Amino acid sequence: MTENQKIINSSTNKVTEKQFYKIKSDRDTLSFILFGIITFGIYDIVVLTQISKDINRITANKENTSWLGKSWPYYLIFILDFITVGFASLIWFENLTAKIGIELKNRNLPFEFSTKTFWGWFFFGRLILIGPFVYFYKLINGLNTLAADYNNNEG
Image 1: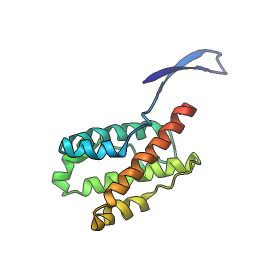
Image 2: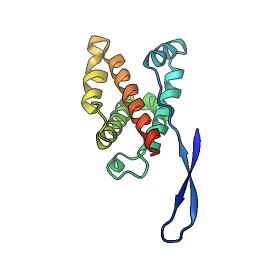
Image 3: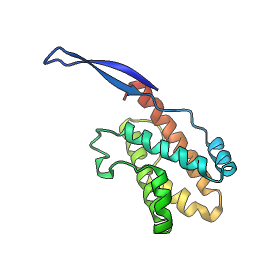
Image 4: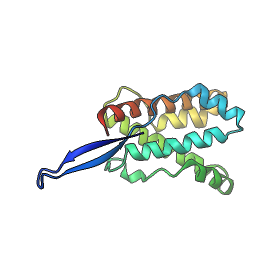
């Protein structure tokens, strides 16, 4: 969803329009997990690709996350997983988690999310089977919090 935002350049007094993209802020963890199971993971690939686009839009022109670069679309990472035996996903999820965590902290939002969350719940949490579900719950809620703040402040 886009909205046009008028910006006045103070030096030239020209009015330019900037498009503002609203980011979906009502993603649901349960539907992510259930539709992922029903579609044999295709739904998850589509949602994670959209999440990477959203986080790239939120962190565009931010110097504090520029060292992480842009997040690749997840469907490319999924393909690379066959070559890298899953290491591409580990790196992608850790970078995504770092970007979301840094942006939450920079916006002073009361949500704890960092690479510790990734390594604790997603990676080592597999030993207790429920860990990845907790990680995706935190990932989706963290992104929803970030998206709501982005939409309210128009960037």
